[in-house]
Image (cartoon, rainbow, N blue to C red; front, side):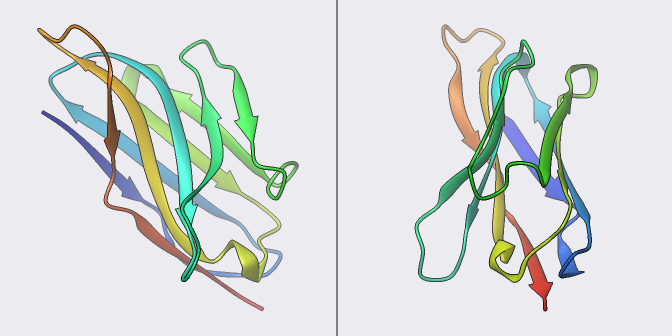
Length: 121
């Protein structure tokens, strides 16, 4: 009932920038938290950044000061601005959202399919 579509991944250079977008669509009544996770080869999926509907943000220590999460509630879209990229940022980045659909009684967790970010040194 809800789809999350990520875009903006690709190849970046160390020290450079990339911007990811994730648009939610479907029978959306309300979106609570939105977040970005990432999973590097051989690693577990980890939380990169999150943002509540009220605008409160949280970041992994590894990206603080380099990445910025933002959202456009009117467009049901969340962004991740990634600056000062490092090769260790290479991973598949996944969008996550807590969404209540029309007719639903609570928010459920939804995931995008992921977008690959590769940072060359």
